[in-house]
Amino acid sequence: MPSPTAAMDDVMANLDLETIPDEVMEYAREKIGETDENKTLMISELREMIYERGDVTAHRMDDAFLLRFLRARNFKLEAAYRLFVNYFNFREKNSDFYANVNPLNLSFIGDADVLSVLPYREQTGRRIMIYRMGKWNTKEYDIDEILKASLAILELGVLEPRAQILGGVVIFDLANLTLQQAWQITPNVASKVIELMVTSFPIKTFAIHIINESWVFDVVFSVFKPLLGRRYQEMVSGKLFFHGTDMKSLHKHINPKYLPEVYGGIRPEYSYKDWFRNLSRDPAIVKEMSSLGYTDLDTNEEIEKDIKLREEAVTA
Image (cartoon, rainbow, N blue to C red; front, side, top):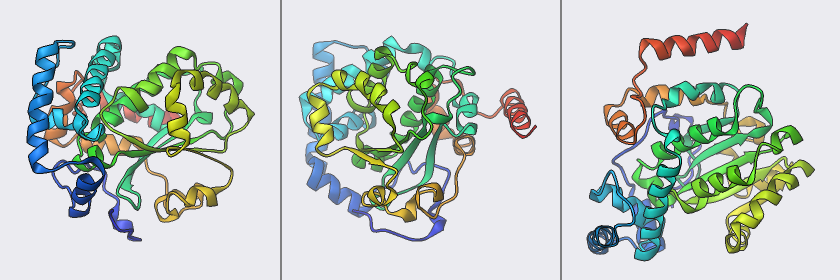
């Protein structure tokens, strides 16, 4: 696995679409069974299975795209196929999460500090998403806006080959979560969250860390638990961790060198908006996102004006 570094110059508000470090390739061989030989064979077999069964109509069938699904399911063909079908079924059922959506227009969620993605990797080479649901103003926007922003981040994250191999880490900070917010998380919403995090997106959730949870969390979790079924036990045994207010418990999993100061780390806070604005200047990323149905990420004058107005409203 990648070795830890204390350097702060690892902060980069961009994506690495090409590089796979040697240690990550070794991890791929040892942990998910990826070799040059079986990669070529399995991509061919997955493509043939998709065409033969005809369960979904895909917008892409190229090698790089199919490889995401194989990596996410440790090169198990049938599991990769089910994930592929689930992904396109999710897209069909939730087309409004993609069509005419510009992630930059969701920057108000990042401005409110409800959702962020750190512009660096933790000690194992994985990226970290942080949700602070207690900061969500339910009167200003509904949960679907948060899900749209989450999906956009996942679609961007999966463009990185090392993220396809290693997966990512999620922190749910539930400080100040209220019943009013909890009641918005219906079984339908919980099902969508599980689809994004577990069953229907081609990137692994390596670990989920719950911090600052209170009794209100029990209300929310009671909605999720029945939907997880057998997966609940799998998650509790190795993916789902509850820390309460004990940051030292969190530090057993994530080195504090890679955490914001509020969690006992040494890092400052970083803006969701700045990350997306930097990515919008990369033509390869704009092309990938446009192919999914997103509005061009180019920061045109209208979007820049909207962002400026929101910034002025926050500082007023």
